[in-house]
Image 1 (cartoon, one colour):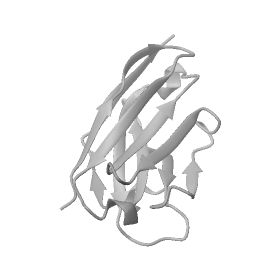
Image 2 (cartoon, helix red, strand yellow):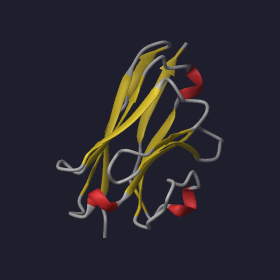
Image 3 (cartoon, one colour):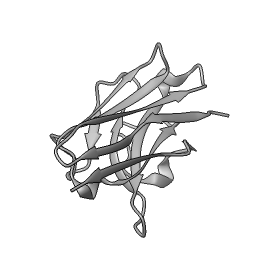
Length: 126
């Protein structure tokens, strides 16, 4: 059973930067695709970014491309999401997720991910 624990997040003004991280319990972390999703109040959970086990293959939602960066430290079993130039529409609960299946390209679909963290709130004020 993989356990994922997010940390970071918080409150920031428009245009500011914030980082969130996610630590995993599983020793085979380096083989998992790791993704970040977010869910705003009243909205469906949406894909934000994902990275292959090696960190070499990354994927971003169009809405965050150029502003967010996903990275991972396999030795620390941690995945990071660095967010810059934040906008009020980025306000959401951010979740990390692990996909234990091999895929050529990380999936943007939440149902592809097997394990989820409990989420961390990011609030961007205008």
